Image (tube, rainbow, N blue to C red):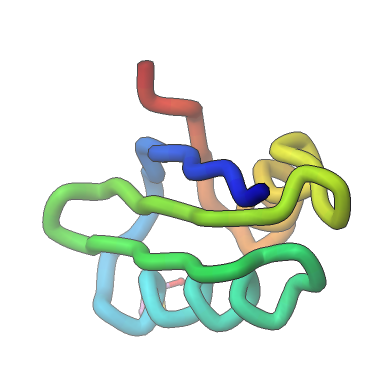
Amino acid sequence: KEEKVDLDIRGMTCSACSGRIEKGLNRTPGVYSANINLTTESGTITYIPGLVSLEEIMEKVKKLGYEAVVKQ
Ligand code: 9UX
């Protein structure tokens, strides 16, 4: 069963930024879909917890060079 998480993402300044994060996450095993919105500085990721953890998703975004926090 997949989980959905909403993230606030800081540090995106052009549309290629959101594209980079989407591409990076969408090629991560266990990520079902990633939709990143530049103007709202946020994103929604659907993933399979048995294949990838939320921590790994956060780490991936960080490694790409952006700050992410889970939206409550
Ligand atoms: Mo645009 Mo974002 O030139 O990391 S791709 S600022």
